[in-house]
Image (tube, rainbow, N blue to C red):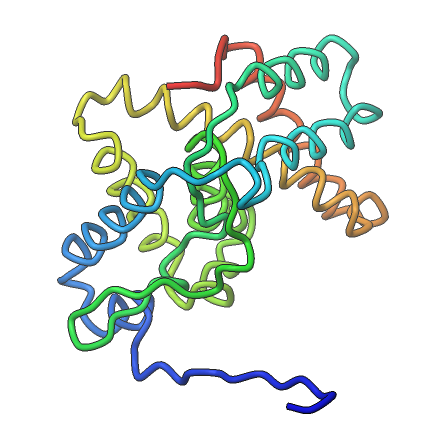
Amino acid sequence: VGDGYGSVFELLNAKSLTKLIAAAPEKLDEYVGVFVELLKTIHGTEVRPEDMPDEKEVVLGWADFLKDYLAPEKWQKLHELIDAVPVDHHMMHGDYHVKNVMMQNGEVLLIDMDTLCQGHPVFELASVFNAYVGFSELDHSVSDSFLGIPYEVSVSIWEKSLPLYLGTDDAERVAEVEQKAKLIGYTRLMRRLIRRHGLETEEGRAYIEAYKAHIIELADRIDTLTF
């Protein structure tokens, strides 16, 4: 207005899937279905290369950060796996979990889209894994404070979501994709904790070693991150 700028915000009269699940846990399968259907819609949307950041470059940055913290051959394998993921111009949310999916009068709404990006869905699944399992795996109370639901429910959402997303009940197939998502997820977690001075505390060092062990074990078993 004139020489000034303002912002206009819309107040949603909606509830997050987190609150809906907490209020009606017996409807968990229904809400997981809504969650996965929206995720597949997002991933089915192709964008122009210039529209959004490339998540692959972000993930390569996480791996680059760990170069001094992993044995050279382990770091090389991790970096090569990520670098080999093909360019993909399909949309991803970047921070997809039940707190960012809202329901308003039966309509599903997506919020907090400052993390929108593009790339192969394995990168998104890594983020989803971290939201439901990775962040709270070593401290289950994190699930309550972050998502507002118990750790057991959070893990259940992940375990129900992945087969539904992949469209298969084949346990081997689901486990294969889960391992790929975990490798990227633990890469982010290790880098994140080191940057937050995790090496300066006994607990932090223990967590970092646990993430490192996961990365090494998974990188040794995985030949490609694509599916």
